[in-house]
Image 1 (spheres, rainbow, N blue to C red):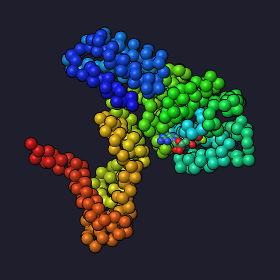
Image 2 (cartoon, rainbow, N blue to C red):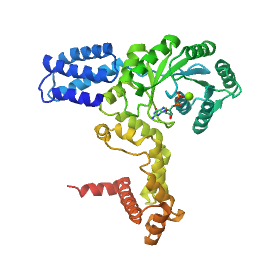
Image 3 (tube, rainbow, N blue to C red):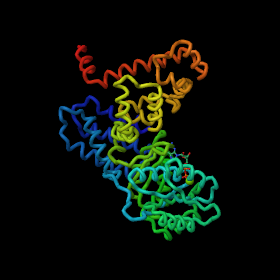
Image 4 (cartoon, rainbow, N blue to C red):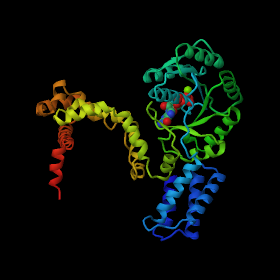
Length: 436
Ligand code: GDP
Ligand code: MG
């Protein structure tokens, strides 16, 4: 694991007063090894460590930072530079903008098509999804389900077996319907083969897309780099989408792909849900690779989910002590929408490493939800009224122990009390006064 290797490399520097030729050389050797293990190709790893070494040696070690911290900062900047430095925006000025999606089977193309449609819809665009994978009958259904779930129309023609024809029909359909972005999903193959390359090249030639996004599974390591190279040689794509960065990821793919094909990474996929898409920020990815935690992404994602108006309403309810089990239930749904719990926790600095050994299930809320679902509307609105007989019935209905129901109600009441205190500035001030 890259993280462990880097941690070990930094230990070499710990406690040393300054960055010297010797400790840098040692650290860089470790880091180069770590990068190679994480599928960064040799040339990239060597260029990177040479650059960092150069910069580190030129630095005066400030008393405020340890050599390790300083080196981390230098590495962070270098890694970010290596991955493109700046954010590369998607080109969407043309009307309609045509976006072609390419990649191997299982890379996450169709999922990404849905995510991108949602992302662009959020930016005020009116996208159309075109189902261009005719090899797998289920692929059209899959795209239609995703389209429905994100509220974006899908163009499909189940009678056709001609990918170029479908793409052109889809574009014509989109123009007629006033769609300003047309996203064309395509078929993949299990491995690179000539027929796939010919097919996708022809779709490109006939549709003249503004963006060709190459989707690749980040878990496939060095293969991802090779695949990227072949696709780029044939398609000259405009950007890369790295999927499945929520798993036990190999951050190295991001580094190598950029350095081998010299095309920007534009998006990363961080889960199966439609919201689990992030714009690729090189500096944040660098921090994530170095284990500093991606706090900014975390906060942004949270903000996207928590509608401000809703928050204000909630605030009002809390102040009046009217926060009830319905609200609680809604909050849980919001948290779940934010994506995989483990993924989210992993973005908090210091927690990422800890989480490796902890198995947080996405259904951590299941038993809580079951208990709340077994309450009557009256009980949900009046948590105070849930006495023992009601608790027994709720426990039975939800398949839990009455102790669990009692515990949940107790926790809910404590939480409500605390929330009320924090929402009232006067009460909060009074509480602070009481503190030593
Ligand atoms: P395609 O064959 O390239 O169209 O790939 P799909 O979009 O059908 O995705 C293949 C599988 O990968 C599906 O089970 C997706 O839910 C899953 N998948 C796609 N993107 C991500 C991601 O970012 N994270 C995770 N964990 N799974 C993903
Ligand atoms: Mg697909």
